[in-house]
Structure formats: structure tokens, C-alpha cells
Image (cartoon, rainbow, N blue to C red; front, side):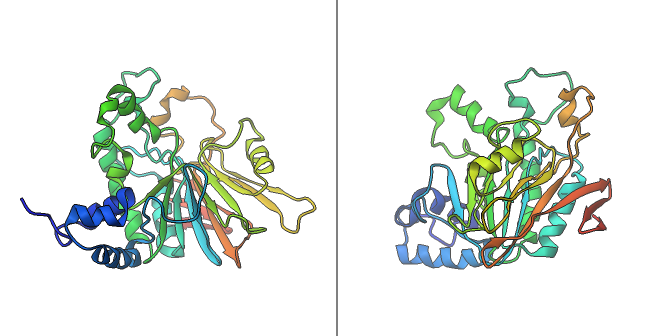
Length: 318
């Protein structure tokens, strides 16, 4: 059987290959020249954004992806906890804001997946989606987000603890399957660059921003403490609270800490484990704007009711 060649390899398959094995081995796998591989990558980057080889880019910490922006918008959403069925109010809003604001980058900041069926926590009698059902639902919604992006928008996914359930279950149960296509979350979502964190404008005074799912420490002051310890702007998820902390000191620029909240609706049945307790949670996400590399005060998009979100003093129907 002959090589599939570059034309018979879909965009998703090509991107997945290039991300995992680089240009030389992609050329060998497809039976084409490296020049053809680089040519196709260049064409696809105009449509999908940066397509990185495993060693491309400046040296960085394990699991961290760098991103530099001079002027523009970055939209960050966390804790989607997507199930099959009706989408949450803020998921609809997230898609609308990506389409309307045309951000330079979109960051999914963890727990896009929920994976209740493979949780280490005890299962209840209440029905929950199987992993395959959930993956298909998430693929549909992320495809909507990709379509809403302008050409060249960078797409990052900082993994959360719920996202990690998929590979952890397989790795702990059948470690011999490592490397088999389909056992990694990236196999199902090749257009999103996966990482543990995204460092925006690293080293830029007033602009350096660490984005990751879980903040350092917990409690009501988690956002402030995380930002103080980081020494740069921070955006996190995990706590579902949504809020903004501003820290001033002797430096020229204020430092901002953002709890991005949750894109999911807090009354969704995925959170039935809370046993109807009063929850200090807020549905929403955040919009970051940079000017000459410096971060302006972050803005919050917050659910108002089932059909509207609040933003910049307006109620926006979604």
C-alpha cells in the first residue's frame, strides 16, 4: 500500500502529525519532501494560527507555552464542564464574543471536559455522559469557536484537573497503550495547543501574564496570593468564583489577578455533588486587552440571566 501523500491527509491529521513529530518525520510519514511540509504548514497557519513542532520556540518551563502580543485582545474562559445537550449561557456568550471582538488569541483555561464517568470520586445513580459522548459534544462546541475566530487567531488549551482524567485513567489502567492514537486528548482536539500554562509577554514590564488553571493555594485570598507570589499578572480558573484583584506597589504598573469564573452554569447537574449548598460561584469569563505589550485593566463578562450577560455596563443578549 502506497503512502497517503499530502493531499489525502486532512488538515487535522497534518496538524496533529506536525505537532507531535515535527517536519522531517512528517515528510517521511507522508512520503513527501520537507519543503512541501513547510509549505502546507504556512498555508494552514494563515487559517488556523501557529502550528508548532515539538522543539519550536524559545526554551521554556515544562508544560508551559509562551505567547507574545503587542496590541490586541485575548479572551480566556475556564471551567466549561461541557456535557451533551443544551449549552450554557456563557458558552453562547463566549462564542459571540470571539466572533465580535476578533481576539488575537483564545485560551481555554482548563476543565473544558468534565468526565464524571471516570472520576476518582464515588458515582451516583444519576445519569452522566460517557467519555465518547462528552468528547463529541466538546468537539462540536470548539468547532463553533474555531469558526468564529478570525484568520490567524492563536488557540491554546491550559489543561485542568478534569481534563487530565482522560489520559490518567488510560495511563493508570493500560500504560502499554502509550503512543497509540486516540489515548491522548490532543488526538481528539488537534487545533488547540495543549499546555499546563500559557505565559503571555514573558519578561515585559506591565504585560507579563501567567495563565493557568489552578492557582497557588486556596481560600478567599487565593487570587491575591497567587498574584503576589507570581509577581506578574495572573489569570486562573478552578475556583469558579470570578473576580478581579488589583495590587499596587512601587512598580510603575499595577498587577492584576483574575479569577475567570466558570463558563458552565453553576446550577448544572454536573455539580449535583454540592448537594444544593449555597455556592459563591459566578458564571462568566474574562477579556484581556494589551496596548504596546502592557495589560490594561482586565474586563469581566458575567452571566446576568439565562439569556443575557453583563459587559462594560451593558446587558448583552446571547
